[in-house]
Figure 1 (cartoon, rainbow, N blue to C red):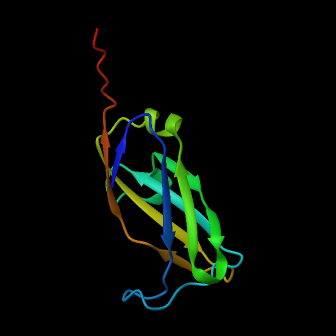
Figure 2: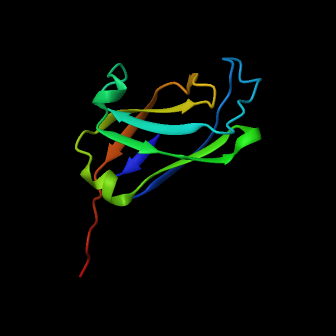
Length: 112
C-alpha cells in the first residue's frame, strides 16, 4: 500500500474469522484499531500511529480507518508496517495481518 506524505488515506476492509476468507466476522459491538509500526514485528504498544476505526457494516464485517493528511505528514519512515485489529464484543481479537505501507515524499514542482 502506498501513501504520499501529507495526503490522507482511507482504508476500507472486511474482517474474516478464518484464514481462507470464507467466514465474515460479525462486528456488532467491536472496536477497530489501526497500528502503523516501524517493523512488522513491533508490538502494538510501540506503534508510531494508533487509530480507532469505524465499523461500517457490522453484519458484513466491514470497517474503515482513515490516516489524515496531518498524521501522514508527521510520519518519518519510508517503509512501514500497517495492521488492523478488531476486538469483538466477546473480547476476542482478529488481526488482519501486516501490510507494507510505503511512504513517499510529497514532491511538487513549480514551473514559471
